[in-house]
Amino acid sequence: MPLADQLTVIIPAYNEEASIADTVRSVLAQTTVPTRVIVVDDQSTDETAVLARAAGAEVICPLENTGSKAGAQNLALDLVTTPYCMAIDGDTTLAPDAIELLMRPFEGDPAVAAACGFVVPRHVSTVWERGRYVEYLLSFTFYKPTQDYYGSPLISSGCFSAYRTDRLREAGGWSERTRAEDMDLTWTFYQAGHQVRFVPDAVCYPIEPHDLDFMSKQLKRWSHGFVQNVSLHWKGILHLPFLSTVVSVALFDAVVASVIYLIVLPLLAIVLQAPLLLLVYVIDVPAVLVPVLVGAWRRGEVVRALVSLPSFFVLRTVNGFFMLEALVTEVVLRRPLLVYEKGH
Image (cartoon, rainbow, N blue to C red):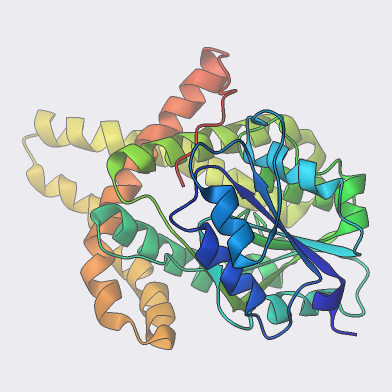
């Protein structure tokens, strides 16, 4: 029996009327259709529930907003009776064979608790969408395969991941103690001795933030979530050599690189009257360009990648600001981000 026949898909949704029907239809049009598709309409104020139901999904509605994506997913998890379940964002569509491919790591390997796929922005038009497009090509063409080779993908992406239901329940479902529930769950699996796999051929297409307002909400949530997870898990991942190294490098980049990038370089350029110092901002272009072009070439999108490259450096600068803000707020001021604010 195909594993997708033993699978429940959970789609948390809040005010997703513009995209929810496409998401549901893409799930139901898979090469192997899951047993059950549950949309959690988290007290939307639009037609999300109506459109999801019309597209063919089972819709459940909590009596009040759960307050986070994790909360909505956990509500549906209580209803899951299949051995496997999957979380897909309400603005994400799937390639036709995405579910079939994503389920393969579970075949014959009980150590695998979760699997995640390749993420490509559905729309690539604005500066922010283009920046995220290059960022994803870099991450999912170079970083994620390297991490998977060593058995430790940093995150099983929340927009499209599959799980063994019993392992997910043993972990307590999706935790609401941080603003990055997918990272929290991934690191929890590793500490319990489970495996997480990356499947590059299983492709999903989320809608990424198209303007600075949406992007700011997402970057704030992600940066605070990263800092919260490091604070929560650092003792537990010290005995996991590769994961602890990856997290250390990411933390170094978040602190030292961001300070140099946003503060030290501009000050030196002004004090020393040496504007050429600012060329350091793009000194790593070749290192970024090679894996990005490899990923783009495989997709037939080389021109799109080249045109989008400058936007990546804009996004990286803004991301550095949010990482520093998260570090100061969470670590120095001890004011954790507690409210889940939806971007995309």
